[in-house]
Length: 374
Image (cartoon, rainbow, N blue to C red; front, top):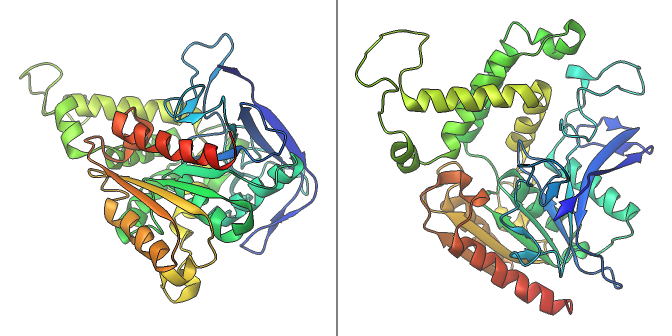
């Protein structure tokens, strides 16, 4: 499936939860499949921290350019683009085409840098709703996302309940634990203490805080994998047998080589200010906060049917957190399907090809398709 990115400009200011607003912004997006005559077969895909609007398919003439959820979305796949019109949107503040910190602020004529306004999950949902309005789409057959994308899917059901028939929330949570916030903060400190960060205005100095980005990615990557997978892939294997170098700089263990490779790659394409913005949005998300911590009360506005999926070895977004959502939705007499997949891959399992996981999602979307006559 060959696809092409698209973009849409918005001149009207978007009010943000922080009290600030942003105008003259662009949203990058991609679409897959065909919108039906009744405009009822749209599935919105929300992305996680370091992903983008490129959800499925490939770019022409670019081998290896498959979308980040290509195992899930496409012709004949669980989210079947022969039946559904699928949209992926890049979030505001990202670095993959939508307006972000590396772009020019129309009010000042200067690059935003650290002055880009704080954005939240709720702000992203509002921006996505504006894009759908511009495309003439009022109803969503489903909204779907994993991890941070799952938080956006959940927020859609609370902010625009009348527009969402189904919500698919994968490997996600109603808020971050203190441990998760701590991991995010350590990663952020790695970035802001990099001498090349320059208070977030590193663009003006012609440098990139790559050292901080590398460490941030290494920290994050450790939390995305399970202990079993790390031991199976790398164990305690030394790269050069038992030639112990006792060096602070040399790479001796295979896991060190892997993490440094991931960090180096990440630092070449991801924006440091974007990392700070998105991890803060993760930290802030907590729909129960305004309801004295009562999650059931917070989820009361939702009218959608739900599918929630978790993975047994995901310690970053554990099954216990998904079960909290299930209970709160059942307390509101919502229709909820829940699958807890026994998979060894940790948090990254939501991106991988697991027959049981894909089968659960396929079955759910078979039902969604029948509901809308697709």
